[in-house]
Image (cartoon, rainbow, N blue to C red):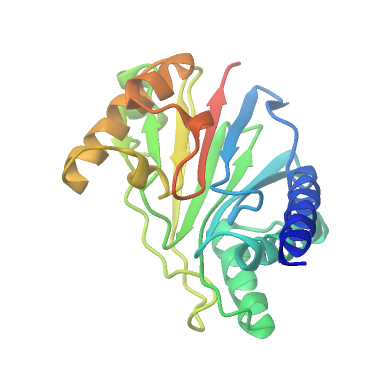
Length: 253
């Protein structure tokens, strides 16, 4: 009887995993000169990592990268709430990353799922080729790789040259009432790329210190996309002890 119960539980988890993966957007997806792509690797059938993006009125695109505390079925349940939230974003009038995080935090507190969420939200202005970004306790910090160091100065937005870790503050979601999520505005020249990795990657890297792991991440984000995992020295398909997601936003035209 115990073996039958375990088999049935495994089948249910596998079915739930299929449904969860169907909630994810198509990758890669292009929006008027920008390409969004991701890879998501769960530690089991169900994942606490979640990625979504959606077109908005006025030639904008919003994206969410979220890392729910823990993994497995309890964390996966929260991703359903995240999907529901993203699906309602296009109905809002000119949403900003900060306002979206504030609203999502309020919803998660009301649901009281006993899980905090670290998240990164961006809104892309496709006409102006710029990105507004806000963080809710997301770590590691995202990386911006500029194809041309001089393009940052020319933009007038004080973007960092080459590959730089973006320091964006903000409290994690689902813990405290918070409505202040600072936003950072970044311009994108052709070839510029934003790279985001969830914190499960830190469990996969073999360096002894956090500083060394962050240096390895910076090196990998500066490499061509096809060399990201090899530069990290990681085989993601082999699996790990935590969920890991890799997201990139690149301007190609």
